[in-house]
Length: 67
Image (tube, rainbow, N blue to C red; front, side, top):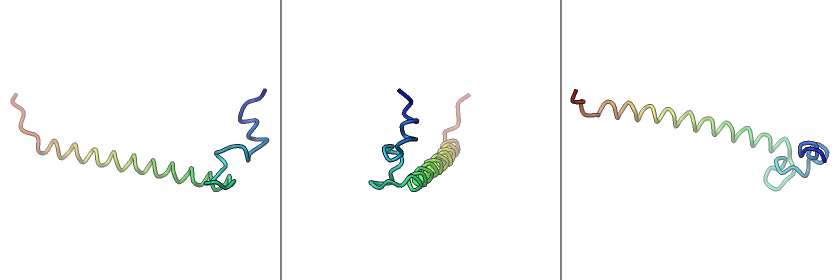
């Protein structure tokens, strides 16, 4: 028995990753995956920027240390 990837090469309509919604559209599904990956990357970048800004605010308003 071969690998799943071999099976999906022979029968691409059986691969759930080739569906955009409920329609068989390998190119459309690939575009959706690309858009999703870009959105996740942007979200991670934006979150890191917000985390950095929060850290700056916390440092600015932290009470002086008693050393």
